[in-house]
Image (tube, rainbow, N blue to C red; front, side, top):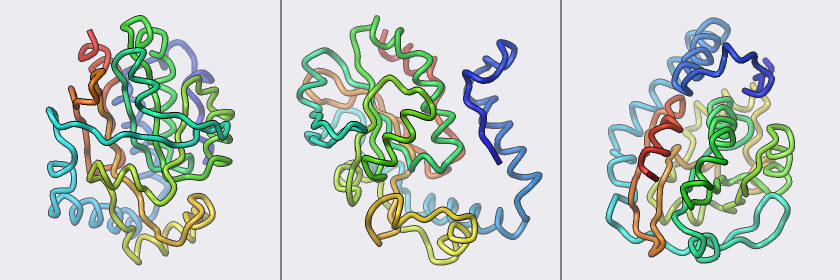
Length: 226
């Protein structure tokens, strides 16, 4: 299944991100076997029972310093980005996830408004620099995609979990090879999360969700920045 980018869609499809992701959920429900959907739903329920999202780095906390390579292999630090103003930081699973792709395209669309608000945008994922480059190139992203090898930064934000064995088997059948994509054998991923950090690295806004099919509306991010 090819997930069309937002830029490929007609003007009539320039809808809220929630509606676009709902369409993707509907397509998945139509084409993916029910037993596979049951496994995914069970994993989400288990993560929610662990309260991974509520226990992640909260508003008012000071975020750890970030120093990671971007999709060009160039070093990027949160200190450098925060000198320009607030930082919008998105944690995603990888370019293989259609919901991550949809969110990144939507954030890319509002990048001029983020910059007009005096802020910068960056995304963090466990995928390798090469995979981040492919994602930026394919989706024409104009902000840095940072490669968090071994989920070291995501772990400091309290977002990391190990993909259960039954879900690993599903991913393998779907040719989602996380050891290759992420460059390690951990089978660990971050839950999706979006933060706004002020100039002092203090969390001004946090959105985190164990359900990888849900993402915050870009309009809400802009409202928080303003």
